[in-house]
Amino acid sequence: MTRTGIGIRTAVSQERIVGQIHVYDGAGKGKSQAALGVVLRSIGLGINTPLQSRVLLLRFLKGPARHYEEDAAIEALQRGFPHLIDQVRTGRAEFFGPDEITRFDRLEAQRGWDVAKGAIASGLYSVVVLDEINPVLDLGLLSTEEVVRTLKDKPEHLEIIATGRSTPPALLEIADLHSEMKSHYHAGGVENGIDGIEIYTGAGKGKSTSALGKALQAIGKGISQDQSHRVLIVQWLKGGSGYTEDAAIAALRHSYPNLVDHQRCGGDAIVWRGQQKEIDYVEAERGWEIARSAIASGLYKTIVLDELNPTVDLELLEVQPIVDALLRKPKDTEIIITGRCQNIPAYFELASVHSEVFCHKHYANQGVELKRGVDF
View 1: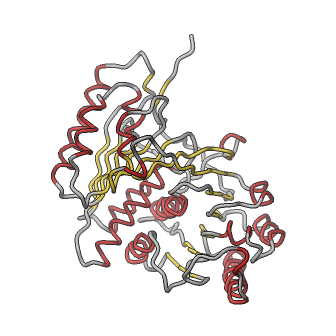
View 2 (view 1 turned 90 degrees about the vertical axis):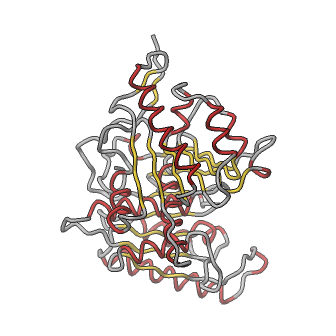
């Protein structure tokens, strides 16, 4: 008999020491957010230990004269961990196509790449994020051959995260992980959806990490506006310990203990379709009561409903109460819903953003051990 199970296994005790090359691309939302989620997780591992993770955020095509969505998240990171986060921004402040490239664009791309090469060679960083390097290569602003050669020769421990649309095939070939974010448009949703409802689903890596990037963003917005932007993270099917997001959530709560609340529910075991236990329903309902009350209260600016989708897919929760709660959410409250599912529930129609993450390549499938602070 074939059993279909949904759940998240506790992380394995073994871990790899070799850093991997991550690529997040595609037209959907969540690429830069996923990169920031990995950064947060890496930093969280080093809290209260000698193994502090130093990170470089190198942002191509994002000149300082323009505001970008992830700016607030990076501000929250820099305030929380000022000695661990370095940021360099290059490029002009407006979008341009291949027929509009100027000498300035090429000089700025080269400046950014020179910084990247120095950081990679230094051995000082545990994570280097090359945000929007993919379109830089696609536009021909840098030599793909040189970038690929440099990344292949990186220090063994270093994690490289490349983001942006239109990744050149040569970079995908050397990538150890490739997740593609695709946008979905529903008959009555997304373009006509409720502002502030975002859904990240699919089999690829980056769903929960994107949600954590949004949590960082909410805190950063509060800092810039001198307001309290409280965040609630509710996790279903994760009643144990050692999960992917633990270190990232620990990092958030370490720096912003009064702004981040965290609730987890479920057992530390796979829930098998058709073999749900009474405790599975009780735990799912407990989590939903917490989430429903939080949504109605208006006290939180961002609420992450992590793994709500598979919980509904397993019929541990009814769909209509979720639809009703989302329809009544306060205007300035953002709801981030994550997790894969086989059957699309009705509340997907309410989303203003729906990104499906496709897994084209993952180093775990090649027998590579997971790395604490990055994978879990």
